[in-house]
Image (cartoon, rainbow, N blue to C red):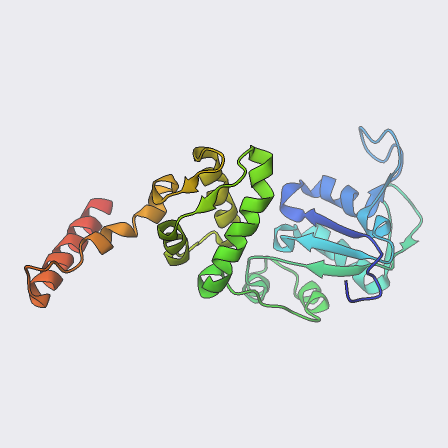
Length: 240
């Protein structure tokens, strides 16, 4: 919004959601009859983005052959539609994202080193959600406002205990896991009602177990530590 591309298109594609042959057609376009089922010509996203932005999400899922073609597009600033003999100039800005460590992927041969260096112009590292807990509740409220009307659940709000549990969970699936959890809670909560901990997934409510094992008024600190340690050992043996 602060760039000269503010009024230009912003197009996004999830590279993991398409088989490689279809992904190539989506990105580069194709001519009529280029392959079975290509009944008409299709403009690729590189061209459709114009002078705007093309966002390549989950780029590490792209196969090596297509990575080589993408590298040529980035170097030459032109794209050749599938089945065509002519190249088309492109002007769009490229933004790419992945949840993998591309340095490790290149070392293991899963991602082209030259493409990595071509993309790695201005890297932005986004910490996992567990390392930015101040974002959890704002994101939760955003997803409630987004999905509440769609699910017909207006006016639902989080109880204090629910908010504490959301902030205390580790969120290994990051923002997508949080969004799915909010959807689950909305499905289980009547419209306009308070969302209580019993609406949360068992994996999140498990946080309450060690809290329940805390020190009791009638025991010493040593006795409490021994009891909690024994509980943790029994729990670990049960899980294994």
